[in-house]
Image (cartoon, rainbow, N blue to C red; front, top):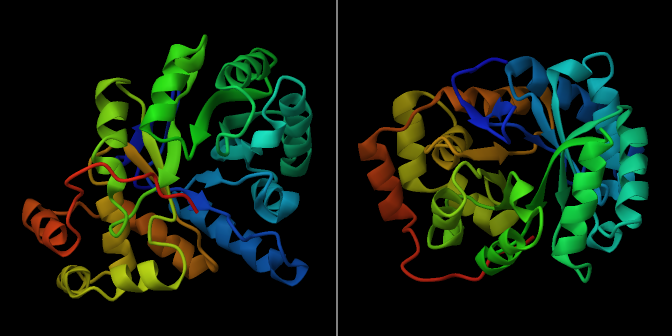
Length: 288
């Protein structure tokens, strides 16, 4: 798996790389698909053998790119995909899952997530996820973009505690989950890891704030690595968060995977806390 010491337990029977690969905005243009496939394959080779996608990304296009990237090496990879909220009911989820499986070219998804909470009751989604698992279509299921209140609600519905992760926005410049969601996952639901999407910030301002920050830059120079690698090492620092950064080319994918080998010191973490202070009160969950 590469950097095999940096894995996170996800469910009772699977460990995944602390740094995987994201695919948001992939599969949207045919002229880019070959390059996207190369980047994903390079990431797998480098140890980032978890790939996160969704039926929403490119309206299935990203899943098709992932399917091409994993062809012939399915057993090396942990596949995560997500269902639209509108498809998360008892009937819709089964059809949506079949479509995702077809695009991915596989019989089973390792982890199937509710992309965000819609109008379908969480109890119904939990029930159909259990059915999909019993049918062998998925191995585990989880959620995405659920705040602490929604997670508490999920935990009270039948089978809700079978959820194995909550995937949310988390990076140096967006630390709100540290106030309540992350502690809840650790304390109320022991062993429930968080998956961090856009772990380097998304778009212009947040990403620049992280990558151009003097403290991040100084740590990177001292270690002979890139600022983005420092930021990824920070996200996975505690051992119960999985980061899923996207890479546009093979070199970028390899650098992301290599960040799993960086263990920041207490001094470095304290400096980053000064540059990017943790929350002192509740913060509404940020969603992209």
